[in-house]
Image (cartoon, rainbow, N blue to C red; front, side, top):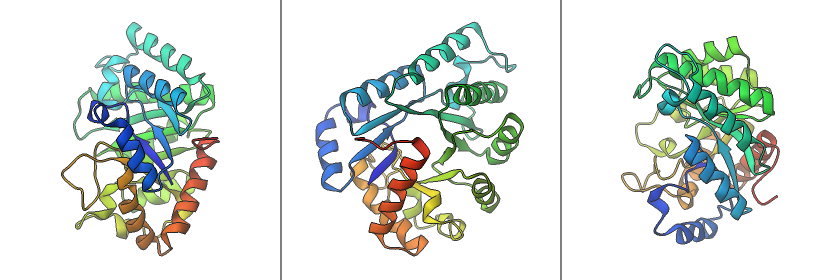
Amino acid sequence: MIDSHVHLNRDEFAADYDVVIARAATAGVNGFLNVGYDIASSEESVALARRDERILATVGVHPHDASSVADADGNITPAGLRVLDRLRELCGDPRVAAVGEIGLDFYRDLSPRPAQRAALVAQLQLAQEVGLPVVFHIRDAYTEVRSLVETVGLPRCGAVLHAFAGDDQTVAWAQKHGLLLGIGGPVTYKNSRLPGILAPVSPDEVLLETDAPWLPPVPHRGGRNEPAYLTHTAGALAEVLGIGRDELERRTDANFARLFGTAPGS
């Protein structure tokens, strides 16, 4: 089983990293996509992937950090050009599987919206240039992302909508364009809308993820998330999709390899 979105380089894992990896292996999680969200975390992700064949990396600038790429008017800054150049360099590493996580976050709005849009467009263009798929972060901005991506162009190599929390319209849009949905801990939450929204989705259209150290599934909600807890998400999602857990794990691993062109350990 592959955890398709995790942040193992975070300080939350510094004290017990090896124990966390061992628990994941015991739980059947034997591959990880470690996701970057700024230059420092992207470099750390690549370093982790170079050290451990079970880990692949992504590199990108999260919408929270879009101000490092563009100003409040949506103009790419000189510093932003250097950020994009560094991402381009990192994309040349064979352990880098995608550009991400990138997108729009209109919930926290930690960067001005014009800067978020400009950073997203620039990184979509970078993904097209280097021939890598995209990991999207979208919060309270699904309509805007759909519109922007349709205008700029869909990622040629595909994409995953990480921490999917969209509506039926977004599901249909993703299905139309062959985009995958990243499903994590919230599918286990008592009042989650995901089970109903995911009813028309095929097991060939989803990935399993934790987003650790965030978004832990029930029964670990309120604590630190970690890859071993992916078993709870897998069980809940298999029930939603009406298949056995072993079958779900097999198909989501195949989805991962299809999107990213490889799998951890290969």
